Length: 176
Ligand SMILES: [Zn+2]
Image 1 (spheres, rainbow, N blue to C red):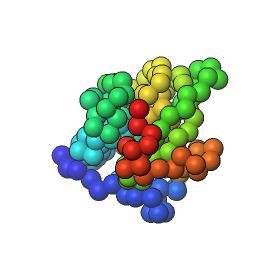
Image 2: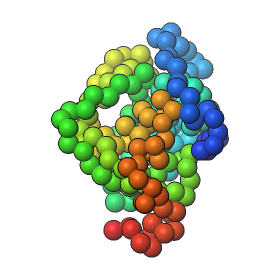
Image 3: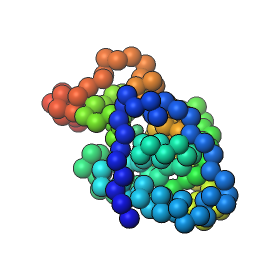
């Protein structure tokens, strides 16, 4: 296991569309090791989720998990979920607005809207197809991570830049 280096906004890789993973590749030792490293990196960085491209790998896979988290102490927890070739379908049109941060945009937060409830589908690390319904914070994280696989960053989803905020100012003025 190894903690990988997280690439930051400005690195052109973060704007690329990641490539689908083939069934054979999922089961390869290299890919299995990569996913283990990706999970370890997410935990080391206290992220709620991380996409492969955030460590410079253009593959359609992300992982997400929320235990008690220093970055989001007030959020609900959810189990470790790794999804390969993910797809998201909104369930209903309801949206929720909230603050997001990103390991690739350290020290910055912004407000934006996401679908409140979604169906996440894709393949697990055994290559089995699965789907699960997510809502609230877990749904927001999944939408944020899928965006990474399409070269989209949270700032692209902000309706305006008025809430683009440094962490220290967030703590001072906005934290509830
Ligand atoms: Zn991110």
